[in-house]
Amino acid sequence: MTIENAELTTEQVLRRDILWDTYMTTKLITETGLQLLRRYDKKAESDKAQLLDDDGPAYVSVFVTILRDIFKEETVEYVLALIDEMLTANPRRAKLFHDNSFANEDTYEPFLRLLWKGNWFIQEKSCKILSVIVSARPKVQNGVDANGDAASSKRKLTTAEDVLRGLVEWLCAQLRKPSHPSCSIPAAINCLATLLKEPIVRSSFVQADGVKLLVPLITPASTQQSIQLLYETCLCVWLLSYYEPAIEYLATSRALPRLTEVVKGSTKEKVVRVVILTLRNLLSKGTFGAQMVDVGVLQIVQNLKAQAWSDEDLLDALNQLEEGLKDNIKKLSSYDKYKQEVLLGNLDWSPMHKDPLFWKENINNFEENGFQILRVLMTILDTSSDARTLAVACYDLSQFIQCHPAGRIIVADLKAKERVMKLLNHETAEVTKNALLCIQRLFLGAKYASFLQA
Image (tube, rainbow, N blue to C red):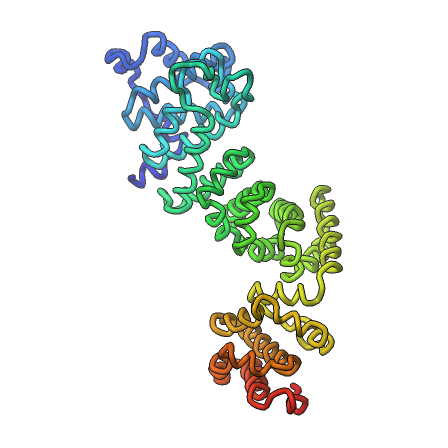
């Protein structure tokens, strides 16, 4: 693909002169087709609009025929530019592709084929046009599919389902390995933000492992272009938040912390709105409510409520989210909150860590699932690079040693000593202090622990 073709615009392409007569000579277009093209090409927008109003399906038929039968790149680009211009001026014209006269015509196939065959201009326009026309299809009725193909027809036509699956495949391919360095990802996300309204697109996208491709794009933005990409990415996540299988993927990704960072730092109302609506949808799903409490969403919501927003939907969603989070906090026991914090692997000095009553009341809960939480603390000591997290993990181990009757033996069996010893030389004083406390309690046991209170 040349840069020239990559950077082409519709306006540049439409400045070309296409010698339509030569295609009639070679019988690639009919005499009627030639007359229609002469009447339409290079005319003022108002004239084109009138021609499409009078005889729209005939023009669509000519355009689709050219894309099906003619393979010269410049001509394919030109016809795609004509269709793009026509639909951009009036998106309702997409219904022309579903006219009854096309009952036995495959109006989707040329665009679906060009998704994979052409240069970037051809791919991007084919994707854009396909998305618009498939979204404008009539509802399925009386055994007729959305392409107008009667169920009893002998000829196999490309169905709307074929198109939507094909689009998802191409869009995921663009997100994984962009054809164009700067245009592929924004174009793919823009398209998905429209198509994910379709149930079949949601299921195909999840099956294609597409959810994980969105998560890295949820990141604070500053430029106008990056803000639009962020907004459309969050719009995709919002649409997926209505689909249970997608929610399972979101729950195991870093989607929630990323959404939280975005909404914390964004001043764009449309971005804040779509993130808050997403969080509201996710609040009651799985462990999202507990995770939102842990990452401080309630404080963020209360800060946002103090700002002047004009959008009623946003204000309602903020109120609903605040109430829902408060209910979650009431329902969560202190140990549930502690467990969520440890499982997320991001520890801080929340009150429970230094609360003697918390350790006294919950020490037996640490025995659940073969001391799962202690094992996770060990993993944190091995893998975390965050000084605060390491310090708190060391302190919590020292508290377990002090409060559990067999704490010293259990922690020693889990090979904590070697891990904590390494942290005695950590560059951060907070880490070395709590690592030392843990080692002292490990060696001396609970009997002498009262002398070692930090």
